[in-house]
Amino acid sequence: MNIIGELEVNVIESLLVVQKHDCSIRELEKELRDVPKRKKDEQQRLKEHKEALAKAEEGLKAKLAETKKFEIESDSRKEKISKLKTQQLEVKTNKEYSTIQSEIKTIQDSISKLEDEQLLVMEEVEKARAEVQQKQNALSEEEKAVLQDVGFLAQRLSAIGQELAKIKEIRTAEAKGVDSKWLAQYDRIFSRKDKGLVQIEEGVCGGCHMALPPAVIHRAKRMDNNMVICDFCGRLLY
Image (cartoon, rainbow, N blue to C red; front, side):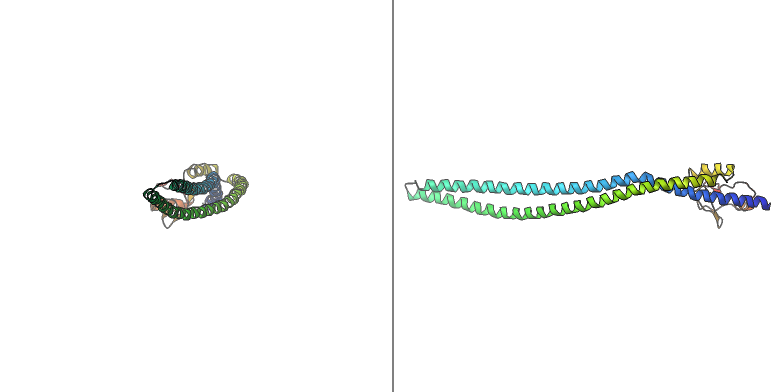
């Protein structure tokens, strides 16, 4: 009985070592799968900054176009005043002169109002310029950060490949020392669960945390070379 118990303990210990390697392999493979997504996330961050800059530039462009309209309209009204003044020199009566003068005054007032509005828009132009500059600076910083992060991911990708190859080699060597019946059962369970072999802790399955019947706990402690499986989650127990 002692020999069988010792053999059983050795199987459990060997399986625990194999499981440790399997968990490491699973983590590394998950990280490996995540790398393309992380790269995509980096590019998405860059895209969002570029879109923010483009939006700010469009806003500045719109404000500049608005100021240009003011300039064109102001020049048009000034030209009209010039024509009216020329016309004023040709009038015959004071009434005609006064009428034209009144029209000139109205246009001058409208130009003054137009220039006030233009000043407000010019303030908005300066704000828009500042926003464009801020977005350009943010994009520049983001480009540096993304370049650094993508470089890190490329290095990590290479490192993961090396780590995986090394751990898989060690795992294969360790697995050769495990009874084939136990290993096959463990492999089937581990492929579906986070762990294939778990410890009984205070009468509870270490995997699903369900309370185990006394008979199951007794069988697991007997060390008679028979596998004991949790009825709730299907994991191997020890």
